[in-house]
Length: 189
Image 1 (spheres, rainbow, N blue to C red):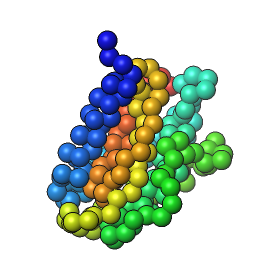
Image 2: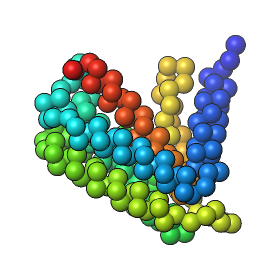
Image 3: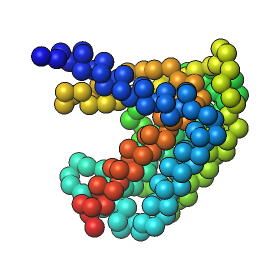
């Protein structure tokens, strides 16, 4: 029988191996290209949605596409600041970006504004990643919050990330929410 701790370790190790391979151990140009491609796909999908579809809720207490977009905007804004620090060779100040950020009133953000603001933010993140340096000794890191379901229970932990791993986490976060949006669209369309 596997204990929860052993299962957590397996899940954490699998996730961190993925982040290392797509981030820390990857060439900076590859990190930039994959991040740009993920954002282009995500932003393209949002740009093609009307407000009625974006605000439709698949079931009570579940998120709409607008809720997901709001969460990404709120979590990636401070993520851009942290990525800028890491690329500049500095440790970002303050605690890690919380995993569950949302605006105070996501339902009151106009859909066209939200789509445009998120696309502008993504362009800034991609531009920052494009300037990321090659790996260097003593490279600064920032704490990143990770979340996974382990044995049906939520598990959260913190890992130190260099700029390439940080960018890889931004990419994975976006791709996970892209999959979530596709599921929402199946339910509401």
